[in-house]
Length: 604
Image 1 (cartoon, helix red, strand yellow):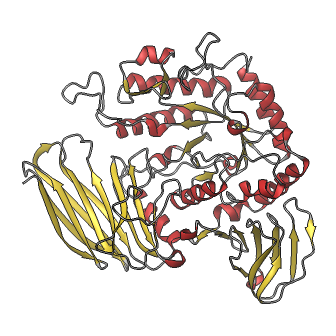
Image 2 (tube, rainbow, N blue to C red; image 1 turned 120 degrees about the vertical axis):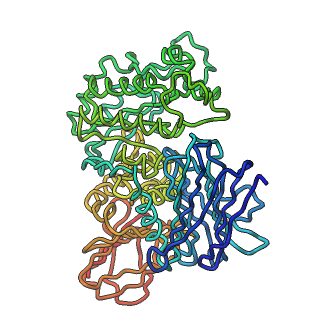
């Protein structure tokens, strides 16, 4: 009897079951349910044994009626859908300390929450699944534990929060994440210096690895005039490969020693000082886990790896070794101190994982002082932040989707959307999802790029689709056509003026089943709405002397607007800020002229 099933918890028209793989029947499992508040239930699952044992694989599943759910929301890169269980495109992902957030949500018409399902395990790996059961016309939400084993234990408890309130999904999901953050071991979120909430310039898409100190400084001078205050020098500043290296070497074969390339940066500290003197905070990129196969780091730690990626040409260091943690921390500490940096972009943290077989023998750790990789990454980050913040208390740290969960978020103050070059739709979904799960941490867009031969209106869409996050620009500014420069200057100026509303106002992404085609931020005295689909009716409530700013990101030249309240003044402009004719509209549903990628301002 290797597989046991417990069921019987009836919840919101569904059934909760627990399946445990326990060959020796050594574990006693219980499930209990309690009402947290009206519409919200908590399920407590407990496993106990008479002595410490390796934990069993088990799965908790909630099977519920469709309840007019139109989609399953998940935090993974904006991927969300509603697909049968027999197809491989189900919403499934792994969550742990450095991966994702253990939350799934069934969302109905109009973005109304039908069921938001969250799991309290935020350190160790859990496999999340959300899909449809075609035969039962039901929705299945499940979490699977200990697929890759775990340290021996005698008792394990995990909780699930099931929110069936008929509230907006953009209310249910942040509240579920706040619930996760309330469990022991989750440190308070890292504070965000003001510059972390202002536009950044990033070198990556504009230059890739072709940047030089001179090029960055020229871009900084132009970026400063456009209102950017953060400079992020990405991959390519470091020594990459000798001139004698084969041209077909994998991408990262020489990373890991973190020495500036003196051909590009003759005196790196002087370069940083010159950029900071222009008013920038300077951040530098590091691929933290990587030791390139031709690096000194690989030679030193080749027997202290989690795995090797032949595709990238790197070994991934094993943070369970104390000497590996010290090596990584000392490298980053030295960079911050020697070059007077303001912050670090710590990349590829989610590559700290077991890929295939764990190289550690449980009976012989071989010098490792920890067994769990997620716990070792947590310890690495804890020790790193303690030492870096001792050097610079207002340090800026950027993480990248998908290491975004409530535990790891306490070690960063900037969370950037995962790479989606030239895709404004993906950037919109990724930044919106991050806004729902990131609390007070600053959400940054993936770096923006566009075709310089395209129209300024089309180029503006890259920025308008990430308007509710901090924009990172990654174009060669000196090569932009004059109208593109005017467009960028206008919209960045508008963004900076209204950033408190955009970043701190009530965040309301509407119609998730239509890719969030209307997003709104509501402040105390103003609202900013960006509409992305032509024909979408925009509600403009100018009562109580509110100002409503409507951004037309549809490509059309008019917008249907339902005006509520008496409009005193109206103003429209194109994507460069040039004024356009705009009569004051009367109350009711009106078709108003708003230029593509332009702005309509209504004041009550």
